[in-house]
Amino acid sequence: MLSSAPTRSRLAIAAALLTALVLGTACSEGGGDGDGSGGAMATLQDALAAHADGELGRAEELYRDTLEEDPDNKFAHYNLGAIAQSRGDLEEAAASYDEA
Image (cartoon, rainbow, N blue to C red):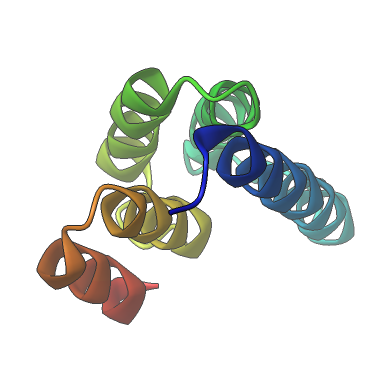
């Protein structure tokens, strides 16, 4: 059985890489464009930071907040899938990955 420390390390690395991807995407697309997505981006960044810190409950809450502001946010959907998968909820994980 795997210990939680390596799992947390992998989650932190994945979240950090995704943060770089999200920030790069936001910069290349000009960030918020007046449609309210700027708030969703800030919430997503907070979620990614919580995820990287291993605060999965807080991260999940923030990813859901992101989706309230931006229902098609693929990063929030994907990371909700990763969190669901980490707790063994494969049905929810698959649904979130499909949304992503």
